[in-house]
Image (tube, rainbow, N blue to C red; front, side, top):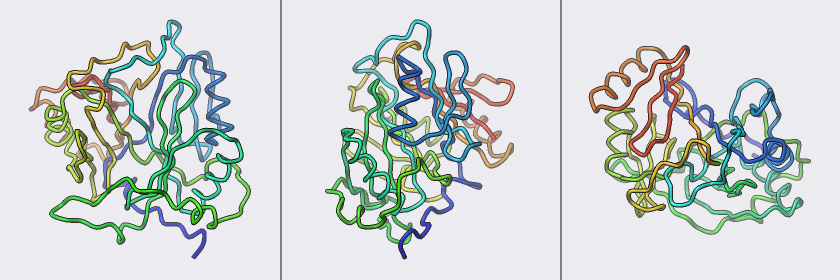
Length: 287
C-alpha cells in the first residue's frame, strides 16, 4: 500500500539507539539555511553560535555549532563519515528525492538490500544519508550477520511511489544511525561490543556494522581514513558528539560498569555520562 508506515521498533525501548548528533560548521547561518531548505529540518532553537534542529517540532535530532576559532574539516582524521536520517516510509523518500532533484543539489544513491539510501554532503563536507528501511521481515540473515550490499538504486520506482508536495522532514523522522571513521578497527570493535554492548551484525572491507535489537546497524565504524588516523581538532568542522539513548537507568548502569572494565573514559555530567571511543569520538549516554 502506498504511503504505508514501515518504520519499526528499532529506535525505541528496549533498544539502545542514536538520538542526536552535534556537529561543527564554519558558518552557522549558512548551514541552518542548508539544513532547512535542502534537508527539511525545522529550527527548534537558535542562539549565539548554536542551532538545534528537529523534524517534529520538539525532539532535537541535529545540533549545529560554530566555534569562534572554527577551522575547515581536517583530512585523514577520525570522526564523522555520515549521520543517517531515517524517513518513515518509501513514499517519504520519494518526496525527498524529487525535492533534491528539483533543487539540483548533488547526491549519491544506493540500494543496501535492507534499505534504500540517498547521500548528500553539507556545505562544510559533513556527510548525510537520508534513507528508508525495507521491512525487517525482508532482511536476510546468515549466522547472525545481515546481508547488506551497495547496488544501484531504483530511482524511478521510488519517484513513482508518491506525487505529494515536499514539506520538509516528516514528523516521524528519526536519527537512524551514525557511521564513524576510527583509527583501529579491533580496538573500536572491543569498545562498542564489550563496552557499550552492541552486537556486530555485518562486515565490509575495513568496516563493521553494529546494532542492538536485531537492527541492520545503529553504528558503523571504518578505517577508510587510514589505520592510526588522528582525532580531529576540537574546533574543526565535523563531529562534536552524538547521544546513545538508553531504555532505563539500570541498562545504562550496566554499560557504565562494562566501560569501566575495559578502561574507557567516563565523565559524569548533570544529565548524562560522557565517554569516547578509542579514536576520540565522543558519546553522551542519555536516558
